[in-house]
Image 1 (tube, rainbow, N blue to C red):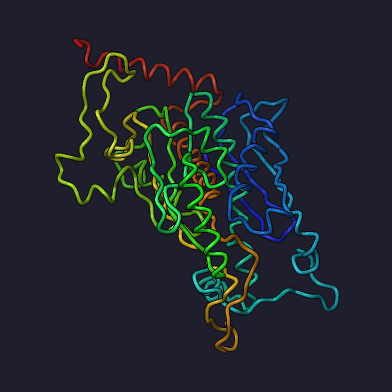
Image 2 (image 1 turned 135 degrees about the horizontal axis):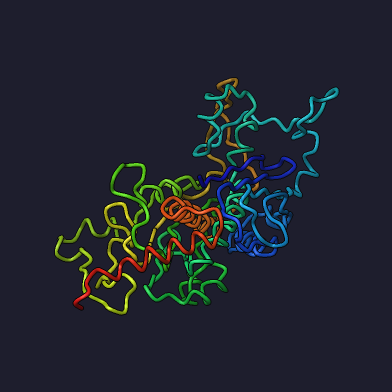
Length: 390
């Protein structure tokens, strides 16, 4: 069974990550994981926390001499800002009076209000520390483990910004991923990149925040991952749930989901044609469905669009309330980004990798990487009996 868990608070000592179910024999190093963590920290519109942290995941278990052992992979990411919070975030009972950095004011749009009532938390810090997007560093580390596994099957995952505020990018099917990787707003077009930066600067000047949409693409995914049999086994449902779990995400579509509701059926179905050069013996003339039909991957690139709202914490606070007294006050300001769309791309890649790694191991099984590879190769070979007259 493949799964992952994270633990830790935003200003606590650090983040713990456990990834269970990765087979033995997968090449994995701290340097490989560090590349993904570094990508998450970049991006125009990032806040001051990125100047403090230099995220690095220390492998604590499950890896020996650069290869996974088949046992759970354990990682630790230090929170360098904990040095400024040692009293307030200490796990030990306080000795005398300390500065608890207590917060009783609700931030509209944050987890504060429902979390306070759910957990009877009179100090909002008990909620906001864990609900902070700082936790996504742990997800990116877990996703890096999944990516190392997917690398063995030639699966690539990329991402780009589709829009920031009202500015749209021309998201092409043949995107220049190298150019996107060099862009601080993750778009290949320099003119669009400057418009994105201008929109972020305007939001910052207005003391507010700005959201947008990003795209995640998985290339080389074998046909047949997921299932049409039960609701919770559908691959598109699992991808959507994974993306929706990212902080501030409020919408997900596969392929051209929302756009295709405005077009007739004859225009949006992906026609299948014989193709002897394709491993499936067939291919599609389009990819409107985003690589998933009936809850299963169809062998085309899996394409997800993810809508992420503006961050709730702003330097020009909204009216709010004290959770204990009911007094109407201003919401507090906690250090945060102005725009999180570019770094959210990397988090989306991690979530896609985790879902796909799970789906591959679910279908093909295996305790060692070579066993999984043999199973995948045999499965692909079985497709050769279809369309044999073409």
